[in-house]
Structures are given as C-alpha cells and as structure tokens.
Length: 154
Image 1 (cartoon, helix red, strand yellow):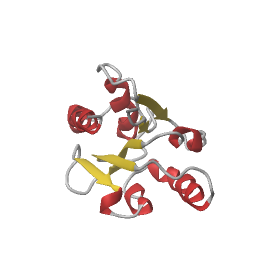
Image 2 (cartoon, rainbow, N blue to C red; image 1 turned 120 degrees about the vertical axis):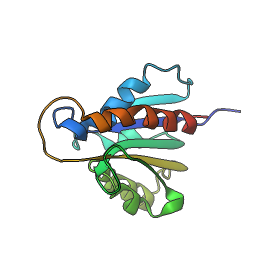
Image 3 (spheres, rainbow, N blue to C red; image 1 turned 90 degrees about the horizontal axis):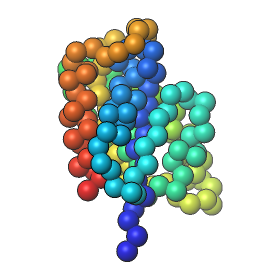
Image 4 (cartoon, helix red, strand yellow; image 1 turned 60 degrees about the vertical axis):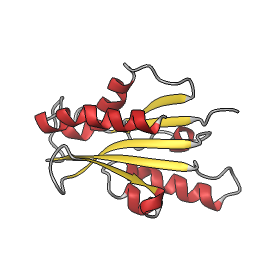
C-alpha cells in the first residue's frame, strides 16, 4: 500500500519578527528524520504558486502565525472537522492566502483538495514589527509545534 503524500508548509516573513514563525518551524523540522512521503515547503510571500504547493498532497499541514488570543506562544491545531476551510485559514496571518486556491479547486473538475488539512497557528504578540528573529515566547513554542507536526506524520 502506497503511503499518503504529506506536504508541510511553513508560512511567514523572516524579516517581520514573530510573523516568520512558520518558516522557523519548517526549517527546524528539516533537522528531524522524516518519512520519504513528506515534503517540506516554505511560503514566504503570497505571490508564490499556491496551487503548486497544495497539489498532489493527500494531507496538508500548514504552519503560520496567528494573532494573540490566549497567550503569546500558544499553539493551536485546526482541522476541517472543526469548521469550513475558510474559517480555519482565517485564524492565521498568512495562510488565508490559500483560500482562493482551495475554493477554485473545489469548483473545478480537477482533483479535489487534500483529504486532510491541518493548520497550526502559533500566537504572536505584535504584527508588523520588522526585525529578524523571534520573541522569547514564540521561540519557546517551536518545539511544541514540531512535536505536533511529528505526531501528524504518524
């Protein structure tokens, strides 16, 4: 039996402080031994070919920053079971750019969306702060986010 093709996409801007957390997670994730059926990608700007990023995946894991709600560094896990894809993606800062791709794909005769979509949102304190790096609380959340992704890959 062929294993599911899983794509893990980190979203963010590395020059915008905590907003780059999704990129930091996937770069650290690459240090782990990953199954052959897993592909790691970075979405650094909304102009990238989003359709290419989601195509041919059976499972999609998107990691992005989200606005603070319950505490900086809190990691949230959203799935299609918890709501419509538009609602799930609207919890994030950058990944919501994927929604038009999902909407078009559903309306066309092309292969449907990945069976499973998981969105990890990591709460950040402040948006539009331009400097490199992560705040202490967001940096501390990287390991938890990686643990959740590794569980998703099982």
